[in-house]
Structure formats: structure tokens, C-alpha cells
Image 1 (cartoon, rainbow, N blue to C red):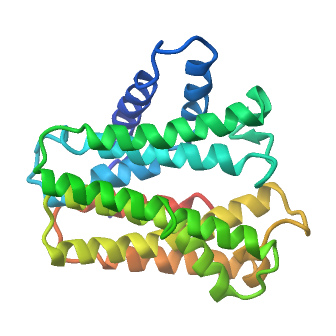
Image 2 (cartoon, helix red, strand yellow):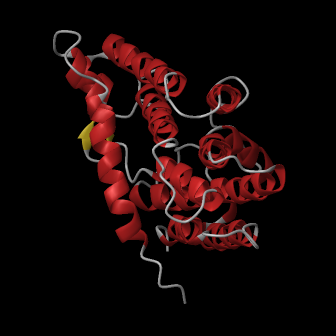
Image 3 (spheres, rainbow, N blue to C red):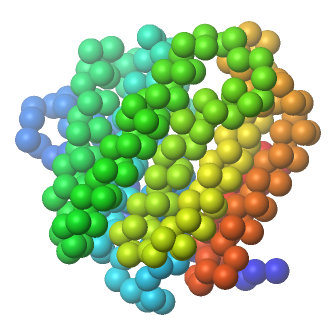
Length: 286
């Protein structure tokens, strides 16, 4: 049994993440602009995606290496994640009034401001990534391209559009998997690849870490669907894996995918945080 303490590893990184994100939005504009942009950053959850960036970087870099070079990309992916939630919560999308116990941005500030907040978070992500210092320019361009590809038409936005277009009519597991690979899976895959590329991973290592991320992304969604169903078991809710497979089969598949993710790391060094994050992903729903 591993003695790695995920909470001890992640807590200071989450605290640094929170402080760094809030500091990006100062007093350049009169209130409530700063408060509006900071609001979704205080309800963004456990910081899974930035933690994956940092953990993947740690696999590639030597023990004790300075992680200052990768932090801008950890911030960037959390900004993209937060923007996506602001827009997803709006009445024209999922129409959610609360997220993690807090009123959503459109409820507090109205649809127009919520749209602007999401836009501000997304564009700030690219500003942070583009102005980062220390990495070779070609690698920085590669990282920005990864960010754009996974967040946009070829990734998260494409998956969200497919989901919106399906209008709750998905009736088979394969289609649902493809939708979530473009939504949830796109950013989790991006997180791992950002950390690996920033650290200078060779192609073999990048391929292994990408396989880890792809299995993890689906496991994460399966576990999320179980949690969502336990909190709100509406029969008319959106399609989900528990509704198609049943809760126990969904849990079984999530555990299996988590182990597949861990197996993909075989032979790589310093994988303890990635292993622990894969296990945490499914333990949330057990």
C-alpha cells in the first residue's frame, strides 16, 4: 500500500492556485467587474485539472525541480474550466441556479454579465499562457496550441455542441462516451499533456501520459454521473451512464478505467500523485 498522502501534497498547491487566480483580477475596472470574475473561481472545486498539470510535470522533471515554469499553464486550464462552467450554467445551456452551494454567476449578475465573465476568464487563460516566461518559444507555442485545440471546436466546445444538439436523446453508451470525451475528457487530457509538454517529455512518455489521461477522463465522468444521480434522481434529467448501465455497473467501469489509467504509467518515475488522483476520482462515488 502506498504511503503517499494526496491531501498533504494537494492542499498547499490548491491554496497557491486559489490565491494566484484571484490575484489575476485586480482593480483595473470599477466594481462589480472584479467581484464577478472572482466569483466562479471561488466555486471551482478541488482543482483537479491544475493538480494534474503539476503531477504530470513532476513525472518528467527531476525530483525537487522548480515548478514555477509550469504554474501559468495550471492557472490557464483552471480559468478555461471556470469559464466553461459559467457558460454551462446559463439558462440557454443547463440553466443551473447553484454550483457547489453557491448561486451561479448568471443568477447573481444576470445573463449579460455572466456571458462577459466567461469571456473574460477564457481570454485571461490565453493571456497567462502567452506571457509566461522561461520556456523555449517553440514549446510555449505548442502549449498554447494544445490549450486552444482542447478548449475549442476540436475539443470541449465541439463536445458541448454535440451534447446540446442531442437534446437528451442519447440512448447508447458509445455515443455518450464520445460526447464526454469531447467535454470532460478534453480538459483532463489537456491537463496532463500541458504538464508533460512543459516539462519536456519525450514522445514515448507523452504517449503513456496521454493514455493515462484518456482513461482517467472517462472514469471521472462515470463517477460524476453516479454522484449526480445520487443527489438528483430525476427521470427526465440528461442521459447519464447510470441511467444506461445502472449504478453498480457504472461504478465497476469507473474502477476498471481508473486501474487502466494507473497501468498506463508503468515504468515512469514519480507517478504517486497521478496514481492517487486516479484513485480519488472513483473513490468519490463509492
